[in-house]
Image (cartoon, rainbow, N blue to C red; front, side):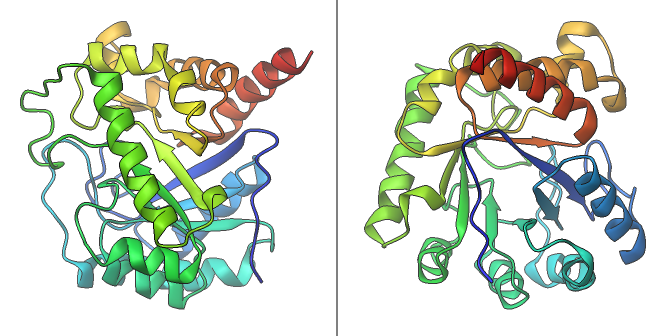
Amino acid sequence: MENNLDFSSPIIMGILNVTPDSFSDGGAYPSTKSAVDRALIMIEQGAKIIDIGGESTRPGSERVPPIEQKRRIIDVISQLKKVIPNNILISVDTTSSEVAQAAIDLGVEMINDVSGGTDDEKMMPLIAQNNLYYCIMHMQGSPKTMQDNPTYENVIEEIKSFLMAQAIKLTELGLEKNKIILDPGIGFGKTTNHNLEILNNLEIFSSLGFNTLLGASRKRLFSEISKENNPEDRISGTCATSALGVVAGINIFRVHDVWQNKQAIDVAFNIKKA
């Protein structure tokens, strides 16, 4: 059964990293059962999408081969599929078409690609052929080097140009426009000032004619502002960006802390509608 997302109100994507080294929750779900239990809690709290990642993309991280990514995620997806409601989407966070194909074979309906389709030339044709939801994210460089010295002439224009070029490629391959989701990539090859400029201009991205995603959850930018070095102490900052994102017309919010962000999102959405 194909799920269609309802973009008439904000959607929460819950983060489920089954990795030993993700910046915030690496190693938190060492068994399939613990990962599935966490997903069910996030769904109960209001997540409509569960985004499963088998490769950390934190700054400085090494690439993880597709075979190891598959080893980490396949059992979790299989078990989760047995217990989640039909209206919940599973997304897989990968830049590899091989991993994406394995996920598709298990009934996954969304791929979240931090490379925006630049890592693997087979990815976009695979997405279009299977009519999946596809998150195109902007990243300067690679996770290993992206925070070394990110520089832009015009950060907003450069991100916008990249996202639009990739989205147009997908439409030319035949993917429905509604399935394409643009993510400016907070923290991926950006300084704190770049991130703040993006957050101050979210309506530029939400007005490009495609659906949009904001992934600011627990990011380092909050510690730069508030001096909170523990990622788990950055929830309030994340909620602030979620509320701003709602006002700016962002569609999907990728977060670790579902109920806290849901409250901020619901309040902001109701104020916006009033």
